Image (cartoon, rainbow, N blue to C red):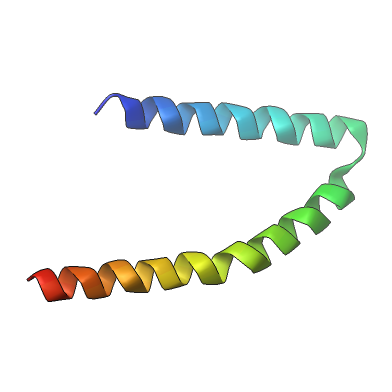
Length: 61
């Protein structure tokens, strides 16, 4: 159970450092553009995975 808080803290720390660097370097608009495309590609895959997990749980009950 200890690994989840460590992972969450690590991701938070990494994202905070990344955002600080991007704000200070001036590459903020390029990052937002790439982030939008990444989210456009991964969001449908994530939603399909959640539907799969939901259907799998219903069949097991």
